[in-house]
Image (cartoon, rainbow, N blue to C red):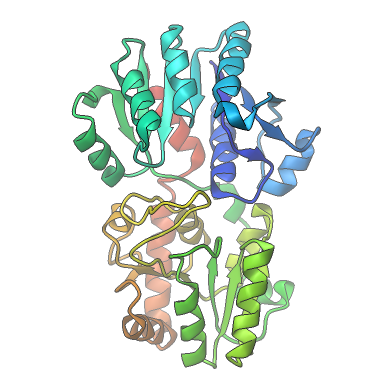
Length: 374
């Protein structure tokens, strides 16, 4: 099939939505489909530059940059995308932009819209309602059951047959043939001690302050945070220094292709989310999220400690992770101590999480989504 993919993400960039777009494209290409991607900001001319940034392993697919003037609120980009894809004559239009999905439906093109948040704002709600009321074949893909539940409560006219839940995924191939934990620590130049790590941005609600407090309480372990933009990393490095924490390391952004080695060098991995989680565009995703880091952790075969948020239980359970109360330092202290003191529990959780990760490859995810349209 020919799939026209469109996103308003900057390519390449360090944001999670940028990574999600490229991983979805790779999953479609791996299933044998012809993919073309349209974006408003394309900073590279060669596909090979994206391979190293995103860790892409699929065959090259075409990317195009289309203009997008800020004051037009993506309307120009959306219209141009539909015009360009018209000549491509795709089987489906695949997008994360509700305007493009709606325009595709209006011109009679079957479409797939990935919803990662609840439609909001006057126009966001209107566009979504226009889309779901159209008669053109469509699918609204939700990244969690909780997100679907929230959206269906607001839009009762959304048909069940037009909905699909598909959590985020992972490239399982990235985690094959990794070195042992000890060898990975040497390659990463880590200290010869237990490593407790976390990856991702340092936005509000990601648990960075709790992470620092845990490092203070467990000086015998190294605490490493992989990711974050330069400004946030500088601020937290300064904060750690003021607290006298010599066992804390903020690496800043690392390419996705290097993340498997960093996780291989870790003994315990954390998801210390708060009760409210901000993203790159703000908002709060604590009730509806599907964190990509969760699937990376699972595929790495590492014991996970996670905040006990209901949406996380859609993927993880008591056999695959240890749960702690969000923002409760005593609960997290008990959790970290429990795993540091119990190697067999660490091994049990890690093994179960690794087995569970096999259900969540990007290739399987995209196959499921495209098959649902037939």
